[in-house]
Image 1: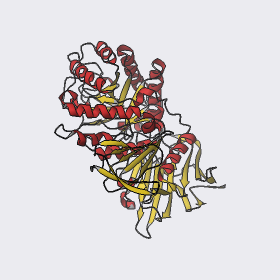
Image 2 (image 1 turned 180 degrees about the vertical axis):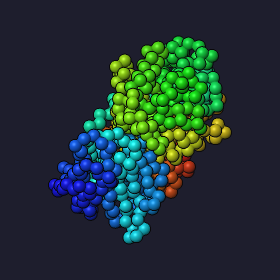
Image 3 (image 1 turned 90 degrees about the vertical axis):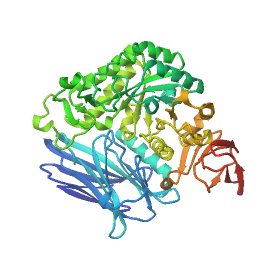
Image 4 (image 1 turned 30 degrees about the vertical axis):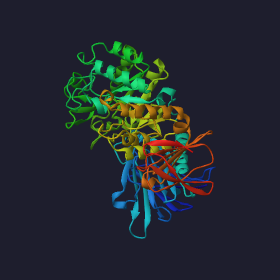
Length: 569
């Protein structure tokens, strides 16, 4: 291990070159920087900042370059494109409710040649990872304390580098596992119900929700095999303008749901669990609570007609925790969709700084979000240990898994490819947490075989549906029922088997999952040769063609299978 302490900057030599750490405006801060080799062969950089008294921590940046050799593409969990970017257009950030600090650089043969992972997954980190034109070098940087931060006297963190060639999927899983272990993160327990087929009200109803219509729709959904329901936005108001001006009171609109508890019970009697949506940070400008919380907002968003609560105030956290606890007790619901966690943000100067943090019992906003969600999780699980809690991309990092057991792909209506790509990314990066598709919808003028492509593209996650089933042709309902049965017959392999998605640079044209008893392959591109093992294998054909070519035991052959169907080999 090498170690050195400098006043303002430090440099250490790693296998791939020199890594530099700089501190700006050190003002009494001392920097320690060390390098060590982990038992698995990865290299670890440890950064420590110390000051004799509590002060604003100095802006701190780690930076280095590596030659672009075998690194044709770059991966991050929330990326939609794996293409390399120039260093002048390659900035991003992560924090507790925004992505995760893992970057993997790989070639076109599913081989990682370099990866970077930062232990810090709660506080805000700025990232740079792009091509420097001079010399085809990848310029990599991580910045700490470059946004408003509270005074501290000590900070310690680590960054992991892995320059060994290995499978792309393994590189991602190992990096995320290291963060969880190093940061001491214990993911929330995942009950079996978190992996059940689900129906959501959002795309089919939007904010126009009524108890009787929901029950009529769920009677059909339950017969098709769906076992969980999310009541999305609209239950708390009679306005359907798609804004958030009426959020924050969280009172049921009586004309829409005259007896919420009785309605929930009727749905549960169908064998369907009931979850309810809340926009956690928002207090609408037309809500009764808007004036009550004046002075306790981080910002005002005129575009959505709502203000964003500051969770550093203990009364704000208590209000939110009490709101969810009351709903759980009053209605006996089974879970919550807690939305817009990523809207807890400071625009410009921190409003708390000029008030000397008056009334706030915690000064760091990311740490306050972490505390809030921990308090929510503890309060809800104390009442119902198997409570279901869904979060939505892009807040999907290791820290967010402490508070919830369902992670859903971000909104991508009608975009089957995005669903497939994001599900695979989340599966690689989320351990045993249940990964859900964005809600599926399609036009009923499509053939049922073509509509099945939306389902097959989501089959390596828990499929959420949001089509108006009462209006669906019987052939479409039959298709949904067929694929729900397949998903449950092969649930262990699809959701718990070892996942190997191929060619992330092409958004995973082939994905496979393997359990002890079988292999399931999803084929999403025409013209590929599918490698099939000797073990019992099922191929789900979403290629758009009614046949495909396989290679098994060294022999190549063509297999007939309709697009939108599956075949056992």
